[in-house]
Amino acid sequence: MPEPGREIDFPRARAVAVAALAGGLIISALKFALFAASNSAAVLSDALESLVNIAAAVVMLVTLIYADRPPDREHRYGHGNAQFLAIAFEGAMVLLAGVGIIVEAGRRLVRPAPVAHLDLTLLGLVGIGALVAALGAGVFVAGRRLNNRVLRADGAHLLTDLATTAGALVGLGLVRLTGLVWIDTAAAAVLGAVVLITGWRLVGESVAGLMDRADPADLARVASILDEERRAGAIAGFHKLRVRRTGRFPWVDMHLQVDGRLTVAQAHDLASRIEGRIERALGGGDATAHVEPADPNDTAPVNQR
Image (cartoon, rainbow, N blue to C red):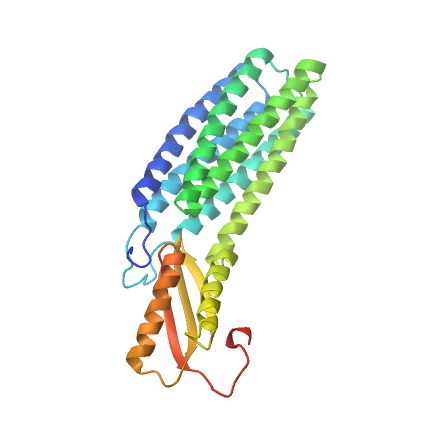
């Protein structure tokens, strides 16, 4: 079992973060080169959004290093919640990029600019989109496999970047078909709105984590185990069940009502067995049970009070 409050699979998470940073640098350079060749507002929007990917990848890497530090005197639950700060920073950067994209689109609506090398730009966007899709899917899948919120958030952000690239591709495709340059600017404005929505969602996820919002799946899994123990007669009931996570590390505490005739040693062994079962079900973690005697005259299910 990992040390309480400490991330597991950190070397793999760090390797994914480094790959995301390297990939982000390459993709951003390609997008700005494409903007220099095309002068497209939609491509500029896409390129600006890619700068956020780079900043987010740097913060993600630093945060993963910090979050892996073991618990200390000032941080008894470890440093895993630093991941939520990284998600908040990434969300703020995405929001900033969205505002910048919309402002630039507004400026170009007032002063339209022609788009050059349309065919080359469209071909370049297809290639860049393939790179972004591969990188975003890889980071997101790794985040789910490692149960790492920061990697999942960055992967989701990269996949949103794919949406902005696809939007730029559609917008320029319509310009190519119709000759209407304003479509490029309109596409940039729509992409800016999509980026703003993504940033808002990331900030919301960070706030939920910092406020210790319970994961419904974790709560249901633990409650199911305790219900099984109650039906089997091992416990009379349970209440005050709480589940939270610091980063990916789960913490569980609960009150178990048991037969008052059990000795202290027997009650301790029972609680330890249930704690271990919960920890295994959650893939690790730290479960703590407070044992109290059941009232033999009370027939109401304790967990439903």
